[in-house]
Length: 166
Image (cartoon, rainbow, N blue to C red; front, side, top):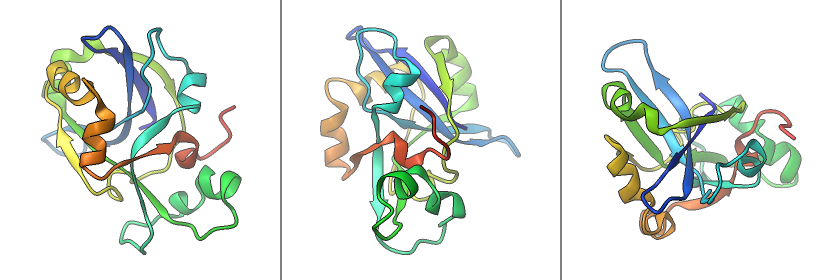
């Protein structure tokens, strides 16, 4: 959890996803990722990540999965201490371990950042990603258009950080 991975899409640009959950207690094993707004010609850096966003929602209702970590995330402490603490969730990208093993060489590790737990539980949508082709179809020609259709918004990465990463 918190691993940010870059990969190249068929347009030659780098995109970034990050891990929000891992199911390794019982089979079938899988990873839940979230997509970032990054779209760089050069390999992204940690600094690029910190300036970017991710796709998800901000829930304004009390949810079942509210956690202390979510309430204590960077958004509320550093950026918006004056407003009620809402819950942030991601649009999930589920990759089964057996599928991930087939195209894992497509990814490059950028950084591990401490993020809020249970982001996948507070989101309102997800999809299965079974190959690099699946990622290409999601990110190209425009992930922004797809996320608007799925009622997801770009949210700043700092809203899910648990400590100052600068």
